[in-house]
Image 1: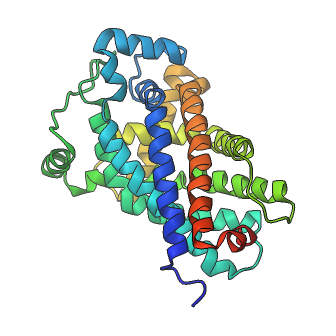
Image 2 (image 1 turned 180 degrees about the vertical axis):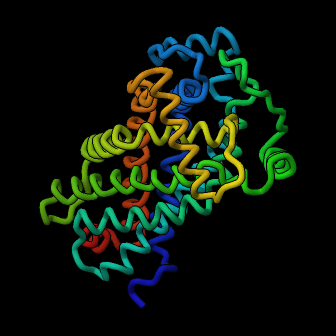
Length: 312
């Protein structure tokens, strides 16, 4: 079957995406540290990214910028492997060799995102907590945690909060599948425009720029929900009881959004956006660049490069 879900080509895309994302995140990890602090620590003033990084280094030391790196990288590797595999396998199965369109890319991206969220949310909950453990918060209400590693964090969360806590933030995460879906729709659309029907490998500059543009647009549109997602994953909020999970999730999201607007104004929904844009745009651009180069080199080695560009 030419368009099997289990194919070597899909595996190449998944591994290339995972390696590219891990490398890019490692390079720009301190920017993600600054972004997360601004999102979850209400009492920390919204300063410029260099100022936040300077505060963290002064108060906690240089290594604090890379606190939680290993669990984040593990989560990111798994998450991007799942997303790239699902995106390209669904795309191959759905289109069966036909040219794609932005609407197709969007729907396929949403489907791949839903699978990715349901599979990898527990990893992201654990990595958020490990990344913030030991941080010096301005908000005195935040409770300290004491996890010795990824497995210990899983065990403590299940013991103290129940297994369901590992899926904290799943509902906004499901809404946020629009982020990578929009990103991939714009990225794939810009790739088609640049090629204009001529199968060719894009230059490094072209890939970097369209990756940056695609991620910037997706991030700005979905940023308020990303902030709520981070707060929910951190687990330092009052949960509603006595109602269904869906109603509880909707009520919690609504309350967190309203409280943030009351406390900081509408701009409070975008607190940390500068750090997020700086980190996520550069990371995504470098990730797409590495992904395209790794994938194209692999396909060229396999003698499949011409077919690869025709199909994408």
